[in-house]
Length: 193
Image (cartoon, rainbow, N blue to C red; front, side):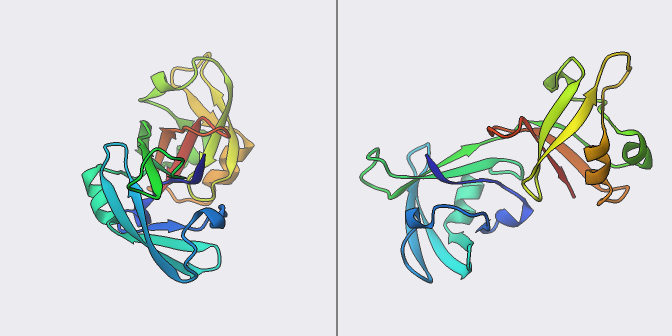
């Protein structure tokens, strides 16, 4: 069982910032920080510096940058850190990486905001029938339900009240990316930058 799971965003490439509530007992007990040794899926050992910045905010740095480069971690990938449950005598923790498949990426248009987001490529990774999509908001980490329509349409479209509410926070020209998502709450993740 992971003590931390997080989708990597642009700020996590140089240091992993953890703001989500998690089982603090499972992390190193040093009040202000310390170091933690982790072993990745290839068997490499990494020592991450661990620092408590604010209550419920922790930062992993040190070998984190080398781990990111060595494993070709990209924005949208998911990282999970688990306690050592007897699988290694060399490390206190295990780190796993799950690359997410990008379904599509496009610049947001006024038409996308008003009429719905048209999916011109990547639709083969989406349902072939009309249904509601459970989508994780990459920023707020809330699960949203978007209407997805394919039948009778030349191009599939994401629309509906939650879509309009979600996308109203963003501007035309922003980049919208939809990924597959390996979580129990949602099947997809959306990010806008």
